[in-house]
Length: 386
Image 1: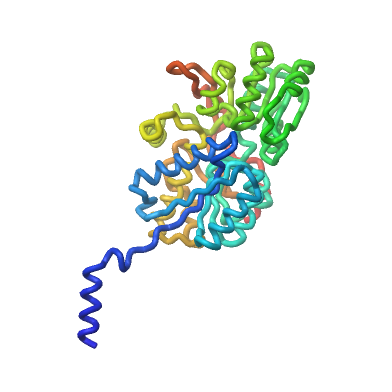
Image 2 (image 1 turned 90 degrees about the horizontal axis):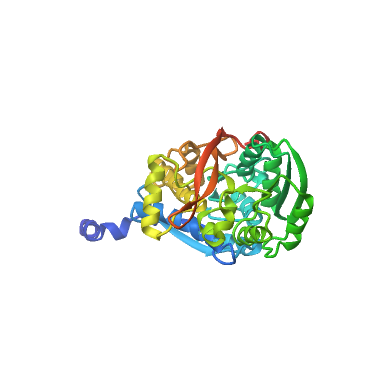
């Protein structure tokens, strides 16, 4: 017996790292990497990966493994990936979904099955209010937030008759509801288009006939590119100003839209010019790594990783939901947004701004104009009974 114990001790000394090293914490990222909106998922992935690179592939000093798959913006595909991550790969932490219809198909079952979901983008109202859950954290926003700020700003600007346009899916309805919550004027028209629609000639003709003071629209990704270009080509840009949330005016979209977006004001909780140490470091490192200016989506992916890093550090690497939940709720990290805390429904309490599209180095970018809301709480928090 003595010889056996001596032999085992010798083996332990020879192979200390390989024999007893903990397996990396698996993180499942379900996101959109194809279709016209594929760059949105790329931005979330790249922002998250940048935070991991800061620690040499770790988060909070803990080894992590990021599994990334394309949901093709399809709810059924998202469900299949989530099931495979959970059952085959044993993933207990997931993130990355871009679109709210995919989130609504995937997230409720995940959180009931004791998987933590940290949203780096989609923030449907159903998950902020009565459908809130202890295993669900939104690190981005609640869908309405970036429209509420525009509704307030447009009211202050004196536009008394505004036309509304959004795609017909959960986020589209949330975004227009958010605008209307703070806008005090008349609604000239409210139209819901097909998701992934490319031609807006009919809608633009209707807007021309309605003669509103302004147009507020939510059309992310390729939809926004097409609409803004067609709106300018129709000659309406100079007479009926456009407003929208940041999703239709991110830096990569502006590269495709160009001059047609110049001067448009949009709502966001983040811009690359926010002056705080965490944001300056993030923007500098992102530009150096990826050779482009980060978008809102990249900032949210980065913050999601930083939040998770802070929680894993507090738990000493314990990744079980019961251990991570209280650590996540503390939000003990330096957000690129500056002020950041979780409300009662585990959605952000944060500052929200108006930005303007301006010229920059031969191209176009966003510049922060003013802070409209300070430590803003979403409208559905009171409905959450956790």
